[in-house]
Length: 79
Image (tube, rainbow, N blue to C red):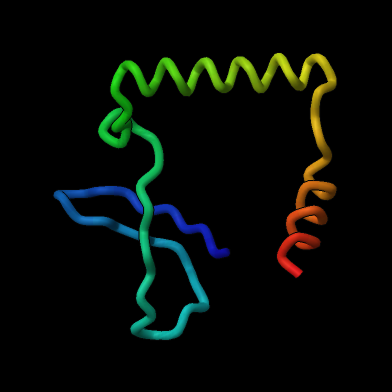
């Protein structure tokens, strides 16, 4: 994945970074950060925070599964 940063100037995206992409290549830009991108309502945000707190508590208690093990299980199911 190639990560590039752009800024907004006068309503336009401005990208000034060297790249080896071919001329005419189409690049998909995804905005990150900022309040304008927060589409959660209060109920959804509360549910998210509760789920995060639960996950942190599970991790603190050692109730975790190694990611490589989970991926191996999923691959075994798919085959």
